[in-house]
Amino acid sequence: MAEGRPARKTIRGQVKRVEWITPHMIRVVLGGEGLAGFGAGAFTDHYVKLLFPPHGVTYSGPFDLERIQNELPREQWPTTRTYTVRSWDPETLELAIDFVHHGDSGIAGPWAAAVQPGEEIHFFGPGGGYAPDPEADWHLFVGDESALPAIAASLERLPSGVLAHVLVEVAGPQEEQRLDSPGDTKIVWFHRGDAPVGDALVTAVRELDFPEGTPHAFVHGEAAFVRTLRRHLRAERGIPLSRLSISGYWRVGRDDETWRAVKQDWNRQIEEEEAASLSS
Image 1 (tube, rainbow, N blue to C red):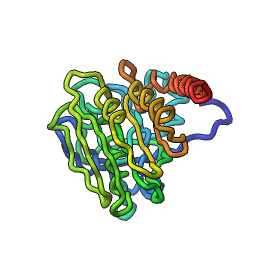
Image 2 (image 1 turned 120 degrees about the vertical axis):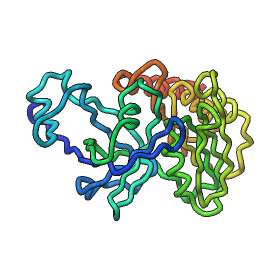
Image 3 (image 1 turned 135 degrees about the vertical axis):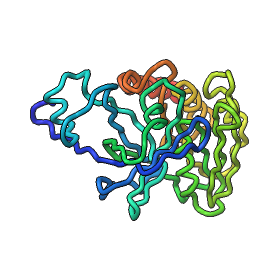
Image 4 (image 1 turned 60 degrees about the horizontal axis):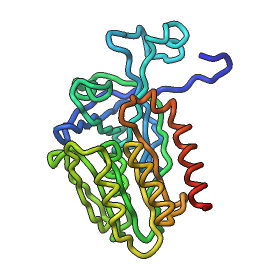
């Protein structure tokens, strides 16, 4: 760890239960006194950064990331994966996180499928910055499986009766979930099958008859379709960035580390293209 850099505090969660929401979505509920003071609640896109030890690596004594990084080679440091907080109850100290499971591939999905009550995991957080604007005339939610936990949490926070168009793409009909909301939700599920991620969502947003009034939009998921929709919403629909929460959660062909390494440059390129388009 670099000299003079303050140590980041990790939070310890203990697995209380594991629930299979759909054939490929697993909910892990964490609890324990380590979550006392966990600061989620203001936003509906809160996220945590989970720390997974490399396969076969165990750490002696209480988990201490600063000690691990000072004493062990980098290949034995934990791997970070970012996940949305599906729900947080400060009274029961229960934190629910949903994981997309693709068999043995990846790190977090296989962990969620195999983890048992009583096991522990450490993480950073929470981060976040979006919640539905209660003053908006209507809302737009667009995303793939990676955005579904945040969309579900956001729908639960909508004011009663407020219109929301909800467009969600999943692998197939078995991956649909019940989405509850006090709002007037128009929910459409798209089944991807063998098509590229997000193609159906791009078409649906382009064809959507936007209601009158001021919208608030949440568009997240695979980076390529999010980029296409950002151009559409900004240049063709005229929605200002202040009314958009829009970002690529992941990118086809890249793991979390390699996507994070290039995401800032990716976003900068989009902003430059957008500025040129809007000024022409």
